Image (cartoon, rainbow, N blue to C red; front, side, top):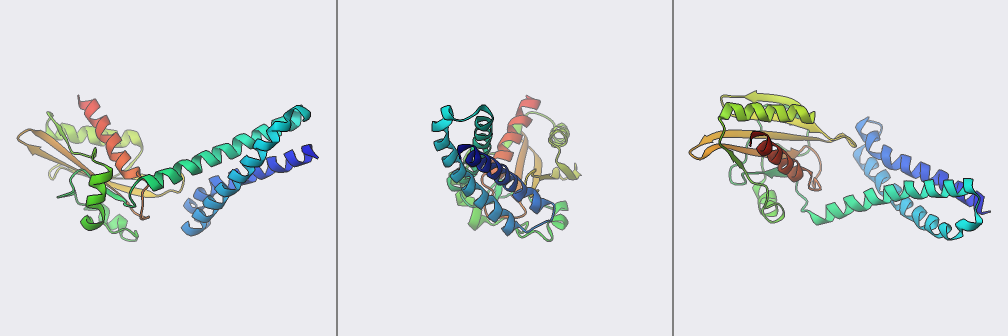
Amino acid sequence: MKRGLAKILFYLSLLTTAVFILSGYGYQWGIWGLGTGFTLLRYSAYVAIGLLAIQTILFFFMKEIRIKTKAMVLTGFLLTLGVTAVGVYWQYKAQSVPPIHDITTDIDSPPEFVALIRLRADAPNPPEYNREESADAQREAYPNVQPLTLNTPKQEVIDEIVSLIGSRGWDMVSINRQDGRVEATEKLAWFGFKDDVVFRITETDSGTRVDMRSKSRIGRSDIGVNADRIDRFMRDLDNRID
């Protein structure tokens, strides 16, 4: 009986993990819509939590179970633990950040998309910056998102930005050296969401100032992805030039 139960739980864990992973890739590959993808993601996480609880209880009877059955129980436990951990993490992230998707180092005068406008033509989120929706929420949630000033010539800074974009595997959209503007797109691995970034590089009395803006094409909340992207990029840029 215990071996049969362990086998059922093992295959259910495999199926649940597969559904959880494919929820995003299925949307990216055009198999189903975003709503279906999120539904599969949510319910597979719920099922994983239930399976994890059952398999945890089953561990108490491990001494009476054969080695092969123990291996199935342990494998199923680890699979559902992984799904549960990912689900809990993203749920925590979603609740700990404001539901915004447009982050910039210059809230008063954010860098504008130019070449990217045509690529965002069908995007649910418009290219314009909605100050009423994003400004105050960003100030409170992401006070560390700030412009970067470097004691390096403007064109050299642009070269470093372009190099960093390439090393990250982002799609380069436009490099306008005269206006000091660089635009690119990052495609996220799981659901295939596309987030657009624009850099504004200007010469000031104190050095070369770099402003960055990152905006999701779809979704009300980015779960903190855009702010993290800006923070990591600015740190890397500062370290490379420094």
